[in-house]
Amino acid sequence: MTLLPYGQWPSPIGVADVARGRRRLGDGFINHDHVYWLQSDPTDKGRTTLVTVDASGRLVDLTPNRDVRTTIHEYGGSAAAMRHSQVCFYDRSSKRVWIRQADGTTRPLTDAPRWVYGGFTFLNDHRVVCVREDHDPDASEPRDSLVILDTTGDNPTGGRVVASGADFYFCPAVSHTGWIAWMEYDHPSMPWGSTRIMALAPDQTLHTVAATPNVAAVYPQWDADGSLVFLSDESGYWNFHRWRAGRVTRLHDHPYDFCGPSWVLSQPPYALLDGPAGTTIGCSWWSDGDAHLGRLSPDGRLTQIGVFGTATVAPASNGVSVVGLATATEAYTVHTLDWTHQRLTRIATESEVTIPPARISHPEQIRWTGEAGDVVGWFYPPTTPAGAPWEGPAPVIVMSHGGPTTFSPGVFSPVTQYFATRGIGVLDVNYSGSSAMGRAYRERLDGNWGIRDVQDCVDGALALIHQGRADAKKVAIMGGSAGGFTTLSALTTSDVFSAGISLYGVADLEALARDTTKFESHYTDALVAPYPAERATYIQRSPISRVEALSCPILLLQGSHDPVVPPNQAVTMYTAVRSKGLPAQLVLYEGEGHGFRLASTIEDVYTRILVFLSHLWGFTANPRAT
Image (cartoon, rainbow, N blue to C red; front, side, top):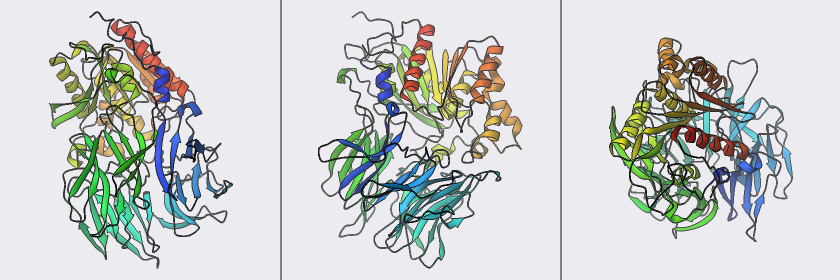
């Protein structure tokens, strides 16, 4: 069989499909047996809205002309809550909290744009508890507090303060008896480092539930019996615990993470289910790279319902939860799960893109040995028009995920399929520091950012080359945000890669430490070293300081309004590379922030990436589906 060059194969997926496949599905709710969820769509300028399905199956937008998204802690989360057909939500466009009544009418609850809100939870009346971030122009950084908003009033003071003094508040939870619990922590920790769970009684007595140094206690949720369930990684893995009458009990001991790191304010990722023998917990857990969906019984036994690439669980209502699932052949899709009958009902998907089953590149988990131990990644091999994986060395893109404390699952993605169906393999690396594999794996990166993550990506590429699956002369590296830093660091410390693509990536660690947001202002203290005491380390490890070692072309893609990695990082890197006479391209997308949301931007990004690689690897780029 004669084929066109790698990269030039006819593909059933084009850049328009990639853009359409970037719909984002957020928190899901069940209210009066109806399902609601947050959804953002690149074709609607990235606007997020609360939607449901009516009796005829038609999608209904409950918040038209609103952008139900919050920028609290820059990454946002839990921008809406529901109770008795009332919806409380934060609108990013007006920078106010709104209440939507059952008849569809809305009115604002707050009016000061300096206050940003998130983590909404209804009390057992007309009030809402949430996290408020105060952007006082006279303060050195925004200040967090836990506040209560009255949905029948105007809240001129921004809400009644329930708790203050901690640097960060996350995930408030309310019991049926009026208790409020939450997670909090202080600089220089991150929410997966050292955190506390606190509880406030109706008589205003404050209780410390969990506060062990170097332990992350997260996601509190009240059980029907008045006890508090939460997750803690005291054992090295995020397992379930219960607080009752001032005493904490570990509910089980499994070497699996039952949640991920708290980058955003979100609902507890589990369901508390009443049963004759006590509370069963509907949950998901990571094991050997797969997401398992199932139950944890009162005696600590796990019962599996299914294995997926990704599985997320929301709190239950009348024994039913909204769950999000993704597999190797289907993108992230929202379902309802009836826990009693183990019945899944499909509701909505992030991607309507479908390609012939024979053309889907199935992820293969591969392992190699790194400096700190085994490293894992997902390899998506090229799939030919004939439907069989192509044998022999192919061009490969090594992807370095963001965070760096996140995780890349082995699931269907329009982006990976866009490349693999054209004859370009993709290796998605879960380098040292990634989540879903326990605290020890995350802590491999402490003090080693820009070292171990880079070496893990290099070693992964070399493993494929040695196996004869990657062309040693045609291996590129690509990453966004923290993954962009890994990408730029790899290009300036190794010669394995023939090209690099950085999406809103970090080029100057010192500039990041000085200019980044409050949430990440001390993140590099653990990843690199304390700043400014160890300033020399920041300079030495920054890609901008090692431009002379760069020997291949780079493509820099950056949003003009990025608060996390300011655009001057990309501009500075581009200027330095060009001053050395090396090939570089820089594209600034006006109005885009940290992560691209507009369909026009996404289409342009993946068109440029394919054209960029085609010039280097000798094929004719066709970003459209054929």
